[in-house]
Length: 128
Image (cartoon, rainbow, N blue to C red; front, side, top):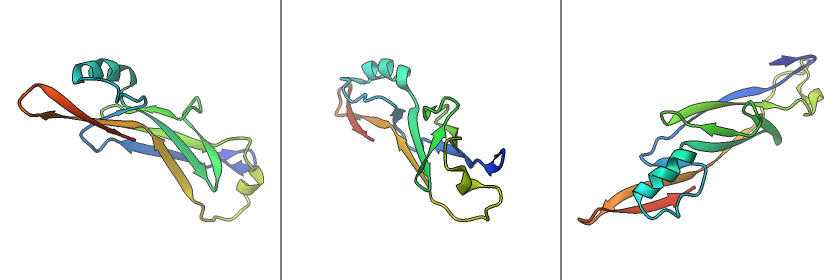
C-alpha cells in the first residue's frame, strides 16, 4: 500500500483449523466434562492471537492492532501491516525489491475430546 513517499507492506494472513478439535484463546483445560466445556467454549470459541514481524519489525494486525482473530466455520483471515512509526526510509518507493523474512506466530489453546470405555465420560487433551 502506497503511503506518501514510502510503501507500507501489508499482508492478508489466512488461518484454518484443520484438526478435529476446538480452538480457543483461553485455557479451557480446567473444565471437568464436555458439557461444562461447551458453555465456556462459546465465550472464547475460535479465537486466536496473531503476531507478525517483517525483517524483525513488528507488524500491526487487525483493525484495532490487537491481533485477535475469530475463526468462523474454522477459518478466517487477518490483515497485518507495518505501522507508520516504522523506519520509512527502509521502505522508500525508490528502493529496489529485496527478499525479507516474514514471521507469523499464532497463539491459541487446542482442545480435543474422546470417549473412553462404555461410560459417558470424556477424556481431554490440551496443547498450544
